[in-house]
Length: 207
Image 1 (spheres, rainbow, N blue to C red):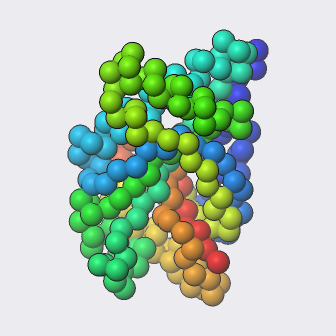
Image 2 (tube, rainbow, N blue to C red):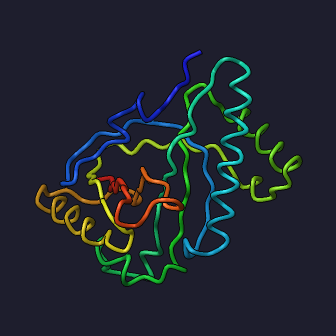
Image 3 (cartoon, helix red, strand yellow):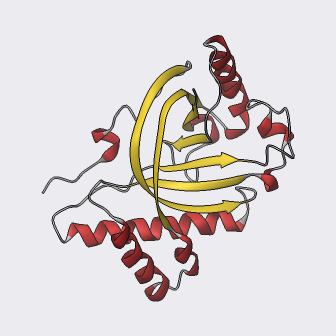
């Protein structure tokens, strides 16, 4: 039985260069959970735990149907109140806006054969059998980013503004404008990888 690996099936989605580039990203389905606050807070960790618990429950339910797949990389959409924090660029936002003010949507991409009903069933199993109440907040989410500017950021998260500045300059040079939420794909497991070796795709939808 061949195991589906979305990182290999959709190489363009999980690949970026260390210089800004334009890319076209199609529609995809995800497991999702929303939150707000500092990524170092307990809530963020609990949200990740809930998301992965549901993801693996779905994986094992399909494995018995000979539709096994690799649970995909963790991703995140990040945003803040742009009315309250005016005239702040994508490059300066990480430094100027308190981490407690950032909202996020954590994501794990799903195979096309996984539907909303499958997520609902898995969510109930995780909630009642494993006692993870946060699983109730996990939901099905579809995203179609379209045209984006992206870059592969190598190194600590606190150095991301350097890569974001490159993205910002690239967007300006092409006469484009931001058109969506800041998107990060964590190619490395940041719980186990030393900061200097972290690899993160940074993506900005544009028009």
